[in-house]
Amino acid sequence: MEHLTVMATVVTSRSGGLQWSGPTLGEVIDLPCDNDGLNEDGLRAASNVPALHFAPLWSDNVASRVANYTAWLADKRPDVMVVDVSAEISMLTRLSGVPQVVMRQHGDRNDAAHASAYAAAHSLLAPFPKMMEDERTPPWVRNKTVYLNGFCRSTNEVDVAPRASCEPLARSTKDIVFLFGRGGDEEVHERLRRAAELLPSHRLLVLGKEADTDRDRDPSNLHYLGWVDDVSTYTDNAEVVVTAAGHNSVMELGSRRRPFIAVAESRPFDEQVRKAEVLQREGLAIGLDRWPSDDAWPSLIVEAKQINVTRWDEVFANDGAQQAAKHINDVACWSLEQRRTPAEISL
Image 1: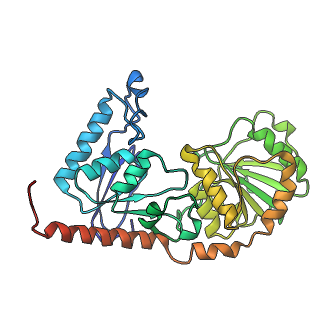
Image 2: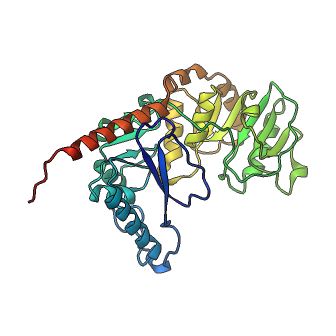
Image 3: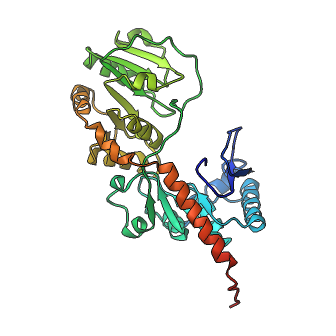
């Protein structure tokens, strides 16, 4: 938000004390969350409307959310809304006659709900450049898309609840860093043990995850560091980083020009699978649609070390956050001018 030049309001749910800031931020509106206070029978009907992703029955929270949001739109009449991932908010915004810019993500978004949200939008913002577009994206969606150069968070933290830090280990020129967030299944510790056994000349540093109760079985080159204050301390000195194919992790590592392996985790609409495909296609990283077989690790590490990380120069050629802000500012100014035109008619 720091690049916006028009007054802005954040409309969100479960803000949880998040510190929104920006030179033009006016207020933060916290709506009831549509995941709370659900009726069990009504939840079973949540996905039976093709044009919506989530429409449960008999939920007071959902009713309050809709009422509060549309009442705010009617009262404030914003010039533009930037809608992040919610097809329901997109439909309410368009029904209220407010132009919107809808954020895109990777994944198979050709379902009716996404198509409706994209059709309702003035334009779409992709938080990646055109070179990272999915080749299966329909032409009409591409034509509405404003592609952005890369941008990422200013902090370098693993997205997990804080835990006690381990003492930093001495730096090694043969470190392989595994980054974990909230993902990963119960077999991940055993998989890491097998990977460490097959990579005896490397030290495996695992961030964002603690050792399990069988840590006595861990090979001597496998180290769990849990929560660390600065991930880049380890990733910047690693030969290779292994991470999930989530957008934030991918962009953070790309911005730091690190060779990495992106392993897709299960997400709605195959978001990470599609992103891993794009990374592999463009030579930006090794992209895998699932955790590799044990015997693949040695060759994968060799392949990852050969990645030409200067490919990321094209992704980060300009500041994507500034580009996004300029587009939002332009749409807001266009909308304001249109509203000033005395063209009221009745049908």
